[in-house]
Image (cartoon, rainbow, N blue to C red; front, side, top):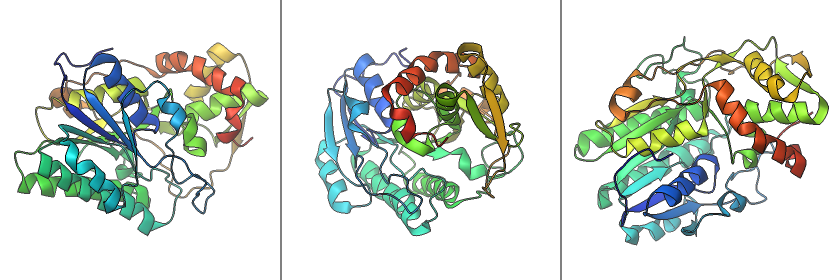
Length: 338
């Protein structure tokens, strides 16, 4: 679905993290609906892992098999790699690259990748007068009471959420210095959908539970499965990014469905299509686990014209075809631990 009517012919778009989950979906959206020149910048998967065993880079070439634009391999923490972007004169920068794994405890690495690199890209935006649209996160709210609203309860529980809050603060400082610059931060809630399989163990619970059910006829949930999240389907996230290009107001906006649903609700949605399977409830080992998130999207609707189109039931039903294909391909063992 096309989310804006304006022609982007001749416009130059940079997508950092463009081989990742959200970045690749953005790149393919622009290719399908608009005649813009899209450049993907990504470090791509290597054999390097964090101490938790998860891959350091989640970008994968298979997410871009249908992409016809230009690809640049680079690390956002390396100024010499970012220097390759100077000559393009980008009109829009979609900054999706980050260390997004909430279980990474290396604070220096997370803050260098998420905050320092963001400042370098903001400076690029200033030099080229490019509209900056970047990924923030619901992680900034920690365990503050839901519904979650911009400017309230911003008390992150982990370094990832802290890094995103620092990015949002930095954005405000740049807007104060450069009032003619357009910068939009999008606080993603729990995103799920096509092309997330290469996130591995950090993929959405919807993918993980679907693959568990297909593989063993049993899923595992933290006791007692009533923790609530605002699950938002990838197509709604793409909608928010694209509509941010025409934003009436720079700032930070929540991107979610606007409705919290439990993990048990995911199970019931999956059973509708996959049939019955067992549920095992286990202890939660994470002290920083968010118990309830729910996006207040009033401002997002008002200033971005964003309206979520996919309920949990509709999003899961649309996604199940790919979940079944992932299971059939054997890729599921990268995602779930049974």
